[in-house]
Length: 412
Image (cartoon, rainbow, N blue to C red; front, side):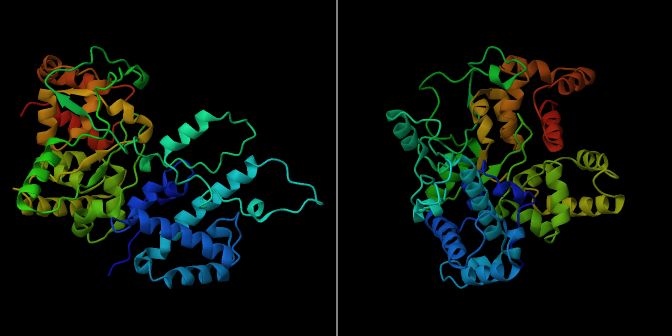
């Protein structure tokens, strides 16, 4: 079995402002909440038992102790899959994240007690991610607790972990909603100008799009248990590249024979996962070649480009009659409110047909807030369309998203 390689931007998983849910997703679908919690606890317990330096990352640890630490984790019956990860990267990612939490808590602690006052075990073991902390308490509960008591500036709060994705009432992402008309009358050039949905008008949970709804209907009628894939999206408001779990790139890895370099090139162009690869392969050969040719000598050489063309041609021929893979679109947590907009129905239908529903909010932000405006853009001459695409300030589209936006506003 090929080793389970880390995501290309695995270092993001170690940051304190990255929800732990991202690491859990990157490790694969087999790691449910209970198993992932046991995994974290095992890392903390073995690190204490073996005397690892609590304020040093893996790179600064004693090599012999670290190897003993890894061996102890591999012997755990609950985690047989750990042996399949290259360089045991989930262990390193969580351990370093834990160290950064500890370092932050040390900086925020009040002055150390005097020498004649003994240090308690609890003070020695200040652990933001331990069971005694509040890292796994839902955000909604923590907000109520803080609201009921006044918290001074000296109160140590580093134990509170931003795990918003696991909190009830805080859905992991919001999707663009579609309707026959748009409630939006004006879109400015700053995401903060977005009109927010009226109270009670937006659902408490993310909506599922037409593709996912069709799939769920078929699955429920056949008695099959449906599992929805969450497709990560390049954030159009800040350009943040998401963590892409391995199960989202199974087709791409198969086509490129686990060539991580090739996969990395495509992801740098914005073709992040299997759904994007499907969409790109469905375009005309001229579109594909023009797009890839523009990056020759920038991202790859001509030989590599020819290899890519062959892979895409083969994939397109094998999957010519397939519909696009269903699933939920997950968005940047910092800008999820900007995605809660009404997309004009005619635009939404075209986006669904192209497999690019993720571009709905970007189109609305660019000023396409009604069906009439969408028709006007479709009627633009080539020069006017180029000007329209070039003046989309405030939106950070990936190269692939730019290509697909151009395809969407070009009548077939």
